[in-house]
Every structure is written in C-alpha cells, then in structure tokens.
Image (cartoon, rainbow, N blue to C red):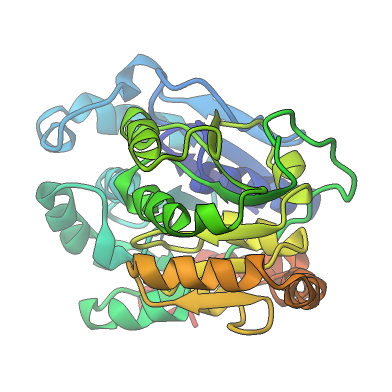
Length: 371
C-alpha cells in the first residue's frame, strides 16, 4: 500500500514519535510510507526513519487561527496538492486539529482519511471552534483511531467509525550511561511536555510532602514547555532546590529511565502515555494517577506499579513513599514491569494497523465500523 502520514510537525512529543515508529514499521513490511508535516516553522526533533519519504506543505502550512481553514483555501489546497502527489491508498492523520484539515481537504474519501486521536477525545486541547469542526467532519473519516477502550466507550455516542489501537511499547538499550544530573543515590523519573495537562505541579507537591523522610532521593522531570519557569519557581517555594531537577528535553530517555528507581505519572488526562510504557519496559515500577485514559490499561495496579485517584496529591505522595521505603517491593514490580513489551508488542500493533488499512482501502469504512 501507498500510505501518507500527516502531522503538524515532527517536534518533540509522543504523537510525533508514534507516527515515525508506525511509518518506519510499515515501510519495513514493504509499504510505501510518506510523512507530510503542516507547520514548516517547527524543527524536527524526531528524525525521519530510513525508507520513509518526507514532505512538507512549506510556507502554505504556517500556523493559523481556527477560522483560517475555512476562510483561506490556500492552505487546504496546499494539503490537497502535497498529499495527492503521493497518490496514497490512505491518509493517516494525527491529532485533532490536523485531522480536521485532512477531512476538510478530502471530504469525499479519496484518499480515505484515518483520523488518529492522541488524547482522550473528551479532553481536547484545541478551542471550541476546532471541536465543533471535529464533530462536523469526523463522521466523514474512514476510521477514527483512539488508543484505549475507555476513550472508545466515551465517544461511542458520536457516531464515529471508531477503532481502538494502542501504541506499541518500545524497549530502550539495556545499558545506558548515567546522566550527570542524577546526583543522589535514588531517583524518581518523570517526563513530558511542561504543561498543565501533565500535572507536574501536583507531582512537586507530592514529592515535597515526603522529601524530608527520604533525603537520598531526587525527582527528575525531563521535558520542555511553557510551564517551565512556573514549575521551577514552585520547586523553590516548596524547598526542593537541588532535590527537583529539570534537565530539559532529552534526545533519549534511556539514560534517565535505566538509572532511576521509580517512575511517576501525574497527568490530569492522557491518551496513551507512551513514556509510562517506556518506563515499564525499562523495568521501572510506576506510580500513576488513574486519569482518563491510559494508565489503567497500561500498568497493572499492585503488580508493576500503583494507581491512585486522579489529582489526589496526598495519595500520590503516599504511594511514592510506600515504594521508596520498600526495596523488595520495588524489585518485584521491576521484574514484572517489562511484560508490557509482550502485552503491547510492536509486531502485534502493526498487525492491527495493517488489518485496518487494508479494510479502509477496500472501502470497508463506507459500510460502517471497520471492525
């Protein structure tokens, strides 16, 4: 099959990493994979894999306000032109606003559009106008891919042709050098874009509650984002200077995850938290909010980590302390955690994508739910 993948950019982020992995995996199976990006102003953080073609909308893809897809046809024409050049059997679009553009450009289903939601659709980060356009245009998609059963159940009433395909869990190298910023004897790792969604303010508050009882532990939050200054100020106000570290966006999380003792996920909401899967794959026990959606389907409470009520800072602190103070329990969970690689194997996930795209190409999307 000839496949075109569409995303706003290949800047740092879970969706960007997922799209490169999927395009690469399908290319290795003999499919013609092409990645097209919309925004030319964002530099690539994730490299384009070998065997995958790369294209961009160029200047016509520069960022826009919500109404410009309707008022400025030039951008949609650029999308049509660039995508049509590849003559794809299917257009796989990632993230809601970009999905809306794809469906506006190809409302007749030639090529058929597979719209991929990367967050639980109930918690879209886009504004009300984009959400209105999503409700209007998503029924035209050959399929809407969500990543968890909980998300699929939540949007079932919308009448979308919904398919659930999680992201794969991908292993990091077993040996990874210890980063210089890991200065104390033990470390809690966290990672993600520094935004309110990720709840790092709650994680700092939880760690501040227990840090005096565990003087040899530090908290490392990897990532960049608009909340960085506020989080650093909060850490200082909570007395965590030297105990809470912000090393920025790392080219690889291998060194951090392979040399930590625990992983913490404090998100207010998610789609499918890739970094949680990566941490478990590295043998890190996890403590996570049971937020919508993803953590409860990825980790096994009491087996490879602990789930706590969403947004409950006190419960998060207590769960972290319980594992920080019990090395034997951490070791048992560490041994169980890499099973995520079996439960969410790359081969099995790509098999699901191949089945879906084959059905889409055959026109199954026009007859109802692809599966």
